[in-house]
Amino acid sequence: MSSPETRSAGAGATDAPEPAGHPRRWAALLVLSSTLVAVTLDNSVLNTALPSLAKGLDASTSDLQWITDAYTLVFAALLLLAGSLGARFGARRALLGGLALFGAGSAIAAVSSTAAELIAWRAVMGLGAAFVMPATLAIIIRMFPPVERPKAFAVWSAAAGVGVLIGPVTGGALLMHFSWSSAFWINVPLVLAALVGIVRIVPSIPRQGTARLDLPAAVLSIAGLGTLVDAIIEAPERGWTAPVTLVELGSFVVFTAVFVAWELRRDEPMVQVRLFANRGFVLAAATLAVTFFALFGTLFVLSQYFQLVHGYSPLEAGLSAMPFAVAMAAMSGLSPVVTARLGIRGTLTVGLGAIAVGLSVLGLTTDSTTPFVALAAEMALVGAGMGMMMAPASMEITASVPVRFSAMAGALNSVVRELGGVLGIAVVGTLVSAHYRGEMADQHLTGPAAVAEHDLPSAHAVAGHLSPEAAGRLTSAADHAFTTAMNNGALVAAAVAALGALVVALGLPRRAGSTPVAAGQPTETANAPAVPVA
Image (tube, rainbow, N blue to C red; front, side, top):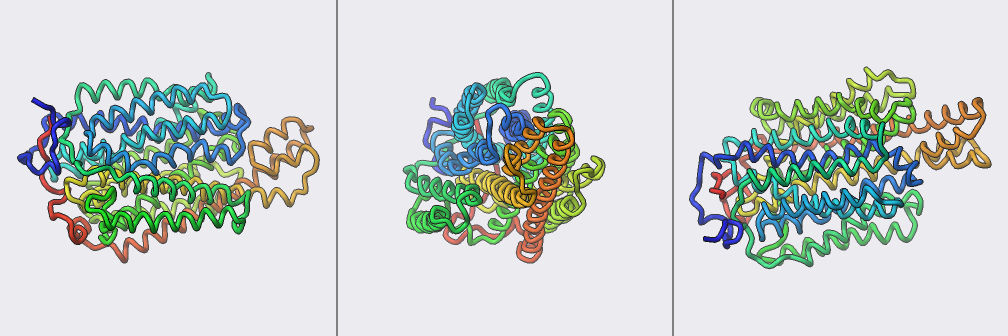
């Protein structure tokens, strides 16, 4: 007898529904959540290690951005193709293969000798992780009956908070005793444990896709995302009106238009573009993008602020992120209760509003001597807002599509998360870098000290070779310039979150979960009963 992943199951509609769900669903959910912890842990550990990377690999600010963005860019760009392959060949197989590739990439990244090598292996890690996210959501949707899915999504979303929670502390503890490479070695045992758990506990689910792979759409999406992010990151160096920048931005528009036109003509597209006519689907996706824009952009600069401006050790910097992560994880677990009381629209509006308020206070009140207790309160408010929204937003996205498109919904869910993160790092990092350089240029530094105009790590490195008096003046000016730049970046992220809250409050239907699917799609949605899994 063939297994569920080897037989053709089409949309899975031939399976009899099992309203009670799979008997091992809760144990399997914990294993699936552990895979998410491993994937999110990588970025939060890396944020703590950024100053060490800058020193160990002689990495510039642009290098640091690409070391972070290479992972998230490849992750986001390949999620749609990975989701399609997972539906075609089996979500459990995709999960196992993706984790294995992610772990192998981590091990090789740990022995990189240049920033370019590390960027390349981070891209390989992103390729592996691209198969993990859609597979976990597809399995969760098929294992759990509709009544239990809000709790399951809350646990899954809380896992992201756990990854953020333990990542900086783990990274700080490792960097106290080992080099930056330990931030990558730590992934290996986590991946091995997750692989064992998947093999022993997580069930297989029926294949969902039988159509030919939509490779032209995959190429178009990769090309479009790549040109957009490269333009944003490199524009400060090249100039926003430089020919290369304008060509890349124009190419992004063209790739996107061709992608949409191609998908609209296909009977079995990689992405059901008509879903974007569903207002609830679009606004839920937008809230996730805004959330991760603020998350990744803020963490990117806060790690450097704590270690260089406040002089914290890597472990102390990791512990400094605890208020943010604890609040995020706690509110993720409570989000079903909040959503039941406020509804999806109210929960998303309040969550985005909390993010906007927290980032605004941070941007308006922080200086180089701000006490940690004040920063902790601001981070906790931002983290609580993020944790509140992630589960209901993900529920709205997956509830908007037919069950047989659950893998595609999982991929789209992850695409908007990671695209928001990529753009958060690129936009906030670019704004901070540009403002820092502009303010340091006013110092009219000459000779070796002029290197301090490039970025904050360079300023502190140069100060180590100066007299105490000159070093004090230089670090004071550099710390002030960076803090002011960070504040401006936080205010931009706050404005984006506030705009998102306004749009959701005015535009999201009161009963978002009951909005119809896009015209022409089957009426069987992801709120249908779970199907049996082996």
